[in-house]
Image (cartoon, rainbow, N blue to C red; front, side, top):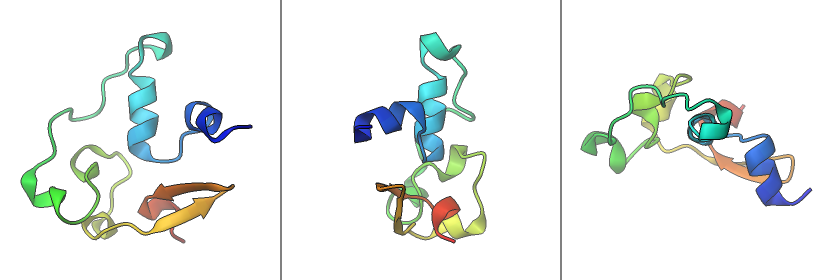
Length: 80
């Protein structure tokens, strides 16, 4: 399966999951706390931190680039 198909079939990052759930064909589910990211999170940590349903204190530091099933994602969920 091509990498693009993986993104749409099994997104890894919580933002990608929320974005795809918000598409009309998936029910138009609103992204939790939809708002532009606060400036305090733009230069460090995860940019989706404020709205992420899976956030932890670790997310306040830059997430590592992790390879999962030949795909790459920057998210602390997959760092362990």
